[in-house]
Image (cartoon, rainbow, N blue to C red):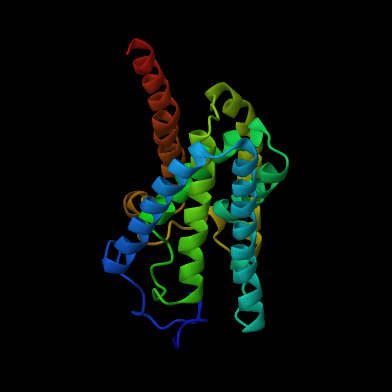
Length: 244
């Protein structure tokens, strides 16, 4: 427990966990089991109970994010990098907004951006330099599990994503990315991995081949692949269901 309050800036090297090691795999199993159980329960609940569930998840996410900021402030370890400008942190506020004022536009972004973002973060956690028993490590796992669970339940509950709707929202998403990129350049942060790829995620493969900032071409490529699966795969599934 001696490293519980440490951050990536203070924890000694070599104290992190292995990707797909026992600890990581246990977290992944917990994530899968939680999604299955909630999916089964959510489908049986009334609309009122489903809404209550989403609001509880949104509240837990906000508490999780506040834990990160407040704990680092109290321990004197706060850095600008802990501001909520990462893609997943921004989605926390979108989820909170949707939980209280549901909107198809918010849900479309959560489906197209939050769902795959949380998925890849859990498979390739960028916080693997932290020990498993570290507070921010636990925060990162629980937050990303909740970030995946919320849009997963939306789809499970009947939300119908539309690519044409997402295309209308894409300029706003790109404007947000541009703003974060400018913030990174001014303050030396790496929100959304727009200054360097980091270790252990798919962007690191592009960085190894193309360097920096060449690796940035990997972002639209990965996004296109994700959207092809999310939207193309769903359309294909719908067509198969009609035939059956």
